[in-house]
Structures are given as structure tokens and as C-alpha cells.
Length: 165
Image (cartoon, rainbow, N blue to C red):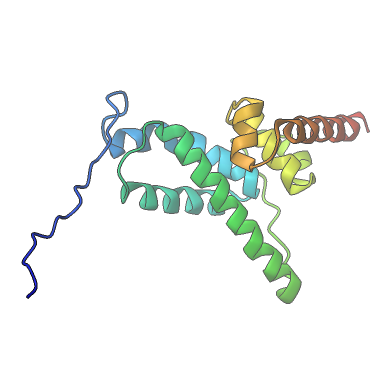
């Protein structure tokens, strides 16, 4: 004999932060900074806008986290990493050359930043464009803070050498 037990469904609890309110307010406040961050990470404005759009689509389907801006930054960094994984495979098999358009909204130094290795470029973008601390960058890049300091130092030194020539 099987007992009829009531099936309990878990409640979906949405965490809303009074400071942010709705997804629309978060979108208005965070879209431009996230596109700038993604532009520096991917070196392609159109791709950056696509990444941020996709991030907000995924973000809107979830309950709002306590710290929406840092959650969104993490999503953008992860999406940019995914983008680079795909680009590596494309380059390996298709020999595709990335477009070399200049993004006027960022600044002139972006041309030099594009030449840096990916990890240095990510660390510099998170530090100077997203204004994150070394510890926050270490958490986003999933590496020790000493590694972040090294990436920042090497990236800045490479930029100094390029600017000196």
C-alpha cells in the first residue's frame, strides 16, 4: 500500500535589492560600463554589445542577486573567455583574421592594449575600466592576487615600452 504524501514544491524566492529595484533599472545603470568592459576584453565593439545583451538575457531569467553589478561583471568576463575559446578554435582551423576597428569611445591606448596577451588585457580592463580592486580581479579571473599584481605590472610595463618608442 502506497501512501499518498503531499508533494511539496520548492518556493522560488526572488531576491530584490532595494537599491536596484528592477531589471530595467539595472540594465540602464550597468549597460554602458559592461559594454566598455567587454569592448576592452574582446577588442570588438559589436561583439561586446552581443556579449552584454546575452548576459542580460541570462541575468533576467534568474532571481536578482545581492550584488548585481559584480555578478554581471563576472558574467561578462566569463562570456569574453568563452568568446576567446571560440576564436582560438576558429583561428586554428579557419585562419580567420579579427577585424581591426578602433573603438572611439574607449580611447587611443586601446590599440596598444589589443597587442597585450589576453590575461594582461583582462587584468588591466578590470582594474582601470571596471575600477575593481586586486582582490576582486583575482576572484573574477580565478587566480591569486599576486598573479593579478604581476599581470598588471607586466601589462603596464609593456604599454610604457610601446609608448616610449
